[in-house]
Length: 221
Image (tube, rainbow, N blue to C red; front, side, top):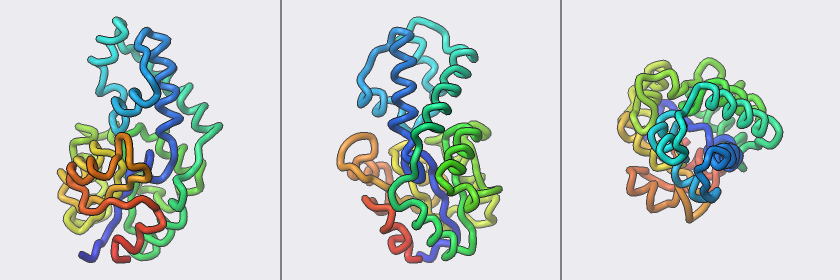
């Protein structure tokens, strides 16, 4: 298929943020009484909005998930990202090549809050490629695994979802892209964990790849 637009997830696809964000979340949940390993926290929360797991957090901590706590989490998370965030290996070159090939019809469609997405893209030098085409699941009726954020991105680009490629690294994200009607490419740099190749394929990824440098060729661009 000749794709007319390419829609990228952000965390774990463009920026190597997930270990940083989940490290902060794990520490803050342990402070409230929910102790788990870094690996367990990644498995439980990757690809999800923290607010969407309110019931589990309140059940394990015995405390309400308050707006004050969420603000404190965002502040600590953002400070850690500002200090340590880097791009996924090969992401800058891949985005540049894809951007050129589809005449700029690319978007970033993330389940994260807008401030986080825009800050991260700016920090690693990717924001100019996505300016005006950044979509947050927090601003949609439903976040991933619902398709809303991908449908909004495709609509803004004026491209039918069936002519869009989606690049994702989690089962939640692959599910969202498939529900939107797009063809999903699963990025899985590790054979283990939340984005293991077999899990992404089972969720509906058309192809799974391990190196971001492979992406333009995989998309036929």
